[in-house]
Figure 1 (tube, rainbow, N blue to C red):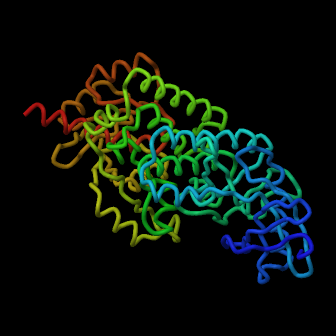
Figure 2: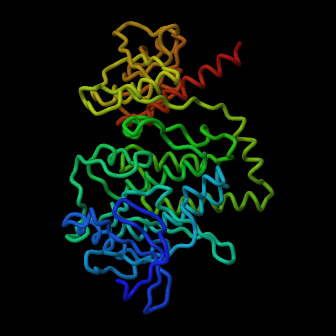
Length: 441
């Protein structure tokens, strides 16, 4: 290795080895030289290290770090790659706080563009986080993003570069893990979209989507509906279409998240809208003023799941976080067949209580009613109780849904129910009802 590279100094250290600044002698160019740690230079460590190089080199894209060389020299195994001159997104955001909308969108768009190419292979990075995103500016001040560290990445179906971890094993950084990744089940391209949604959320609000101990955060990714970016940071001037897009990226079900192509197109549309607003004189200050007038909803509580279902959940941290948020009592009319839905509601601080047939909710006991029936007379009686009603009839006929709204229900949802969407809807229904009560007094 000494005949090919001259090491100039250490740049940092990762999970697999040290990274040095070096000069490649035959081409006289600066490189980043990653050398496998001696303690990991066994068969498994060597396989993972070389696999990282193969996966990264398979991705040819302007926003991916370029791999120049892989080799061995006695006991040393190394990867020579492009030397980046910018800084980690983690350091970049910590120095600036909440990023301007235009900058956060451009960073996200470039990563989404990378995903379009990667997911077509299909290559899944599996560890998107601010520490693995590099930000640099060229001489003209144009921003360029690079995604690095492909140590957890894999190419689906490829014998040499396929996944090494088995199902049931959780890998990655808790704050940025997709729900399916947090559960240790099959991970695909949609997991990268979720992780990127967590990164975008932090750039827009200056805060993580979920906070707490590692186990607490994993549990929240699985069960808890995130507070919308607009509600978390009303001073940031986040437009509604961008707010909706972030929540779309953070959907609990992988199939509900946008693909990389759809995501990139949506970001470009938001960028175009913002550019048009600036052209017409509507700057971010006007957007901030509008957002600041919105009523903020408290952070969603941490979950309290059934320990028998998942004994690994950090119940102490969950209960502590739960105590800091308002708990709401949900009166349930009808039958919930899915035990996971009960657990999901409780995880969001929404405690379901079955209302017996013929009984009515009371404002002193119930904050909101979840009606899983289509009996219109029964619905009318529920709405007359003074407690807001969210109806989820077994059928989804348009005329039935319209009639339910005419009978006074606050909102109507159609099955199948997604716990994060339902939790968000129930909380917003309570907020609107209380706001209306205040104005009526």
